[in-house]
Image (cartoon, rainbow, N blue to C red; front, side):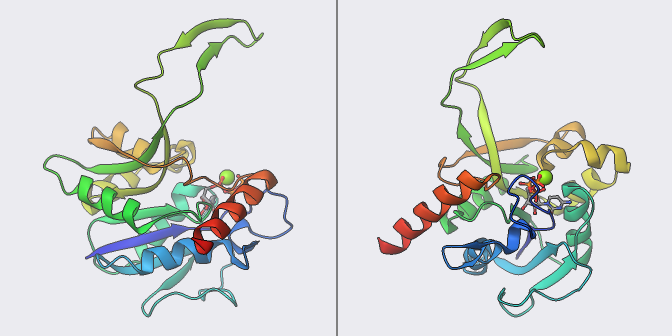
Length: 226
Ligand code: CTP
Ligand code: MG
């Protein structure tokens, strides 16, 4: 069975909601509840661990997980929250990591990343959307240096799924390296592991600023009307 880690320990400074982002109400429920429910419904996942901001080891009022769901206090940086959640998890392999900030997760996407990591020689599989904007590289003074070939570029999301041994090894690094990591796959890559991308819809957006909350709310309401 797989274990799933939901990282929800950030404060959401860019959202400016006055409370942790994971607990902000979205379409009538706390943000984290949307992805918690999706992961709970995936048959291959045996346990869910949620990394939360307070040191209180229980899910906040209004947030509900299936039996066996654990809540742990997260760390100062995202990778530290991943590390602490993994340390609290029971046995289970592979490890599914998901940002609470992506409430539009689907069971199909989780299944697709789980299938991809099961392939021979793969250590990690990450949900990602092909880049649709034209991408330019510019100097600090704004002058464009190059227009980057887009066809090989992917905007990386979560879920990210890893073989547990590879993830544990990749996380066993100095705090300064953990602090530098913007995603877990990078830690596997720098340790020489093989990571594959799994095509995901752009709809699996990350709630970062207030406008993302508006878009996510509209998409969730549309999904539930359909
Ligand atoms: N996260 C975490 N622990 C941290 C920092 C972030 O578990 N120390 C989680 C967030 O809760 C979020 C995900 O990592 O689900 C992606 O991070 P981000 O979108 O940057 O969320 P925040 O750090 O909360 O937002 P901000 O950077 O605006 O403060
Ligand atoms: Mg952050």
